[in-house]
Image (tube, rainbow, N blue to C red; front, top):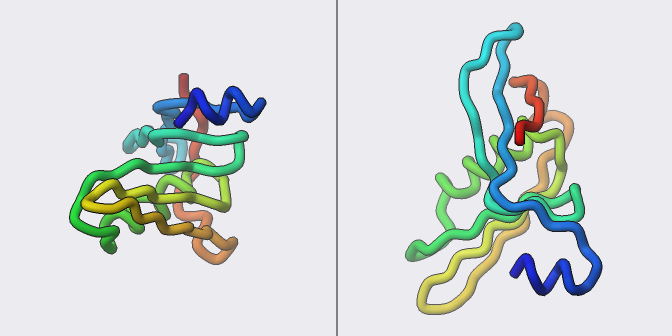
Length: 100
């Protein structure tokens, strides 16, 4: 997927890490599968169906990254996807910085 997007001139970063800080204290880390165009987090899954835990994981990634749009792509017997939007009222529970 990344090679196709890069071939179209779109910037793609794999395994982008984010640190979760609470009052300056490191309390965890997240790794997003893909960040496309520095604007969209893409999580790739292989489960029976897109469920609440997958959506919750992506909401958390969006909140700590500061990005607003995410996409879950689930490869099962067929390919399914779900777009997730993180609006301002869902933000602010953690401060994050991007790590290499």
